[in-house]
Length: 301
Image (cartoon, rainbow, N blue to C red):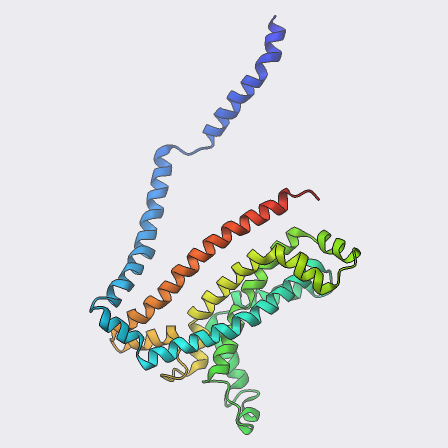
């Protein structure tokens, strides 16, 4: 009888042991409450209060002055230049990111690790140093400066320099989002499509693109947010020419240094709104990307 009970009892014992194990690895309730409270206090002090202060200061003197500050010609010029830099740099980085991710994830070749290192270069270099590199290349005393001056081509302290600096700072975002996603998906589907007679372009648009669309959109969102908010590299190459080469972050700095706080916070509130919209879209895409990766992992191979 005891032998029979020993055979029947172990599942219940195992369940009890698992329950005790689950509770043993959990922190006490007061520890969890304390950690959550610390996190909320930290977010309140360093995120929610500063964010609320931006909108409070921007609207402190009423909507009329707020709208007037945003419609100021210099502010409008800064907004246009910021959009121009983003509209040019994001598509370029999209093309580069997809091509780089495709090459790294789908093929083996010499120099692959070097390409990965170069992609990570903007993450390891200060944006100010990146701006100085363009000064050394295209400045009046730089490597190409005399030739550019001779042909009346202006890069520094003009839109091309701002676009180049923005492209350099933002080019890892799309590639770094797509590389792990494409590596996880493998090459089986593309190989099957090619075996069935599909062309390279057809395979990319009908097989690869549907699998990476959410990761691609996620990388584009991050790239766009960084492009519009970039300060260091753009500050070095722009020259701070008011109404011509100031982006929104540079315009905010100038207004603040002039003690024009209402106008500074008004323009800053546009950047804050952009950040909030980006965060909302980013959260949605993260959810869809998680679902896509989960479906890819659960799919039979």
